[in-house]
Length: 218
Ligand code: E4P
Image 1: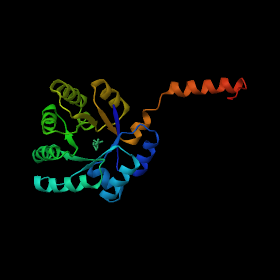
Image 2: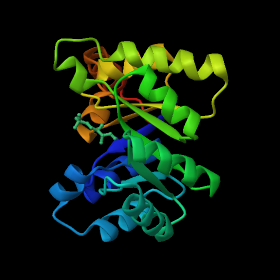
Image 3: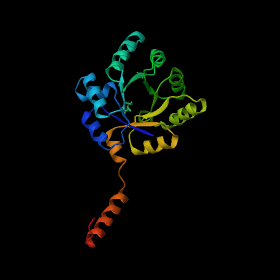
Image 4: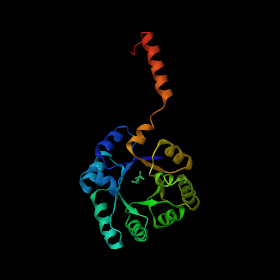
């Protein structure tokens, strides 16, 4: 399973990249706006911070011709870039066009398996199924993830199911159980994935016993 960081903050990307477990980064217009820096400069710096990683950068136009122009511009910046496209009608058309040209896409704002099916048929590289925003409406956001994973498996689509809008480690646990290919999350969620109180207690006991015995390595 791939782990992506969901951020436009370069210092967060550098921190997670140090762990050696980061497969990519997803950005969106909100995250880029929050970064306080330019779009291209931020995305290129993220590409450099995660060598070989898949870095999603989103178009902002909503009509096909402009979306295509933006997508080609964004894709030309760096080979690691994946063009992020919203699941709207011209977006699906755009994904088909880009797939024909070998340009990778991440279809975003997907909430249902029917939307996911349109993205998969268009040739999306990643299908970003949002979970937290659905949970916020007191509805099970993970249900559509499971349906989408099953749909991709049943029909043999090449798209990877990317669990987005992740709010806590339980979402990651559920994404694993659903067989999702990728989860993207804020740094604070990725940091929480290290934690267990029994790990802390166990380590403290090991070190106390070792030190009490006066042992050394080598
Ligand atoms: C995904 O690519 C999105 O950027 C992101 O996961 C949205 O998360 P949010 O619902 O917490 O804003």
